[in-house]
Length: 528
Image (tube, rainbow, N blue to C red; front, side, top):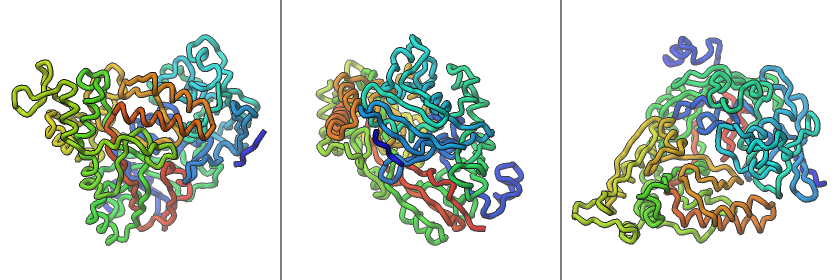
């Protein structure tokens, strides 16, 4: 066995309950988020980054990731593998309590990940559970036992996979542990409708949930018994703001921390002139445009490839991000060690786009500038959510780019959750949806449920890299999978904005790094 150790506004806010009346300088940090959380504050059901911010502050994970994406101890203090690499045993921290005072045990860990594999789990299966021993029978309801997860004792839990599984720690870092004594009382198939529990989360993390006022804020109070030490700031407010008012709110002292929404040098200089600090990091979230590949207009990959060639992605980075970002060409961050060097870069090439569209049968038969096929005009409906200014501004640029190659584009905007619902409904047909997501280190998911896409070849590569911890096997098969995804053009990979934060003058201790923006939240502090 090998073991790894591992103002006016303030007065109004108090009156309306946004900020506790007793809060003083040094007791409060107000952090801006751009859209209303959905209110799914649940470790394995959440979907948006806005819910995730709350979840990662309230709940704890088995491991966190360091700046090089290596797992670091959290609820799990150490771990070891069996000789054949198939069984991973975690040794848990002792004495941890849930926010309601109940003890945290290995039963909570087993329950969290076992429910992901259960027949009635109300979300898509994660790749993680599919590789657990006994998953098929358990998920089909043929067995009441999932042998892939075993509680050894109160502080030890073992996971056994069909084959060595390299991405286990990535899943643990992405899905916190939930409280069995709370969720076991609720029918699994109704979890998505359990509003009271979803909106009143109980975790083991540095902050306790207090209140969610939709379209206004989420309020958290520190957990004095947090196993990582008492958090330095008493109250965290995740305030629903917007990119158009955040700058003045930061300058006026109504916000303490906000992501940078504009990399315009004039805006950055305004912050500097006001004595605010700017932190810039490599981006960890990609903006993209998924296609419904079942759609007859888009089922031919040449059409999808043409649309990517037609969009001037570098111009979006230069014009909207002022160069503070990068373009990418497959379902991984270019910093990934498995990112292939020989991907099709899909350079901006309107003529190439026209040629591919013509090969797929789309021509301008009546000379009106719009392509048609079999009597049907090529009209592309582009849905996009409000709340992210750069994404909103990219929509008309994409519209102009596509018009230049003969595709008429209709823009439809809605709030984030309404737009997301289009992608979440497998029966809903669409053309394209502007969306973004955070890269999850070490997770390469072959479940293209947004694009409704399948490929035996890609599935074969995924099966190979999800059944090994051998670096050579991983590199070969993940690389081939990423190259295949690139060739199929299942989405337009638009851009990766650099991650930036503006810190108010009272913020004295702030730590974060790419992929872990809230891992050090217990150490954030502001001056009195």
